[in-house]
Image (tube, rainbow, N blue to C red; front, top):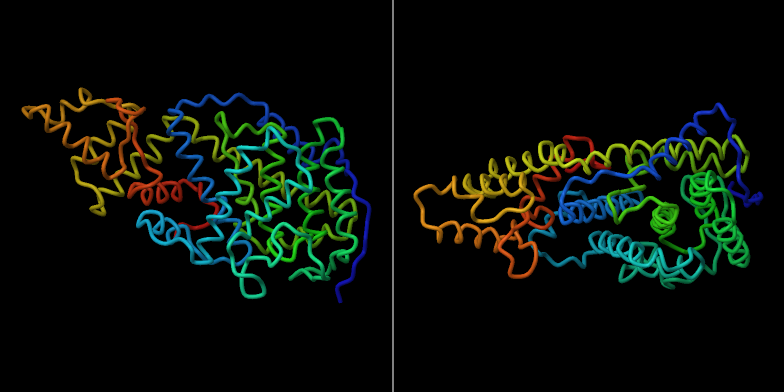
Length: 384
C-alpha cells in the first residue's frame, strides 16, 4: 500500500569515471557550443514552431492523450475548431511553451511562475476525473492523492507549500554550473514526488524542465531546439519506472534517474541539432516534403519546381524562376507566385517585398515535412 516517506532534497555526486559524469560533460559542451545556423532565421522559426507542437503532443500523450501527430496537424490545416479537449490540451501546451520563451529571461523560476504555468496548461479543459483540467487552476491541491503506477504517496496538502519552497530554494541555490543539469533532473523528480496540483502535474513538470534548460543556457532563440518530452514519451512505462525507483530517495536510485534523463536529453539534442545545417535540412526534409506533397496531388509539378527553388535559395524572387517559364510573359510568373502566396506556401520576406520564403509549417507541406522528419527519426512518437 502506498505511503508517504519523506527524504531530504539534495544534490547527488556521481563518481568521476561514471557514465553520468561523461553525460554531464558532453551536455555542458553542447550547452556552450556555438551552433552554426545556416538556414534563414524565418526557416528556423518555422522549425521551432513545429517542435513546439511535437513537444506538446508528446507531453500530452504521456498523460494518456491519444491524439496522433497526423490528427493534430489536420486540425491546423483545415482550420478546424480546436476546442475538443484532446486538441485543446495540446494547444495549451504550445501556448505555455511560447509564454516561457517570452518571459524566462526576465523572471525567476519560483512558485508564482509554476502556478501561472499550471493555469495555462489546464485552461478551459474539463476537470478530473474525466478530463485533464483542474477545478482550481494555479492552486495547490487541498486533498490527499495517489499516483498511478507508483508505490509513493505524495505529501499531505498541508505540507505542499513547505516542500515547494524547498524545491525552488534548491533550484535557485548558488551551486557551480557543473551541477545545473543534475539539478534539472532532480527537480523534475521532486516535483512529481510532491505532486502539488490535483491534475496536470506531469505536463507542468515537463514545462518546468524546459524552462530550467533555457535558464541554464540552452539558447532556443539563437539556433537551438530542445524538446525534453521526447526523452520521456517514446517509452512512458520506462519513464514511470525510473521515476518510481527514485522515489526511494536512495542515492543510487536518484543517480540512475539522472542518468536516464541526461542520456535521453543528449541524444535528442544531437539529433535535432542537425536541422541547423541547411544542407541537411534541404536534402533530408524540405525536398522530400515537397516530393511527398506532389506525389499525393497536394501541389502540382510546377508548384513543386518553384518551391524547391525557393527552398534551395531560402529567399526567392521572380527572376530566379525565369528558366521554368521560358517563353512566358513576366505576368505568368507573378500569377504563380501570387497563387502560392494565397495557399500559404510562399510569403514575403517583409511587407510589400518581392522576395519570398518557403513556408512549410502551416499548409499542406506540413504533412510532408512531418513524414520526412519521421523518416529521419526526429519525431518523438510515430506520425500516424
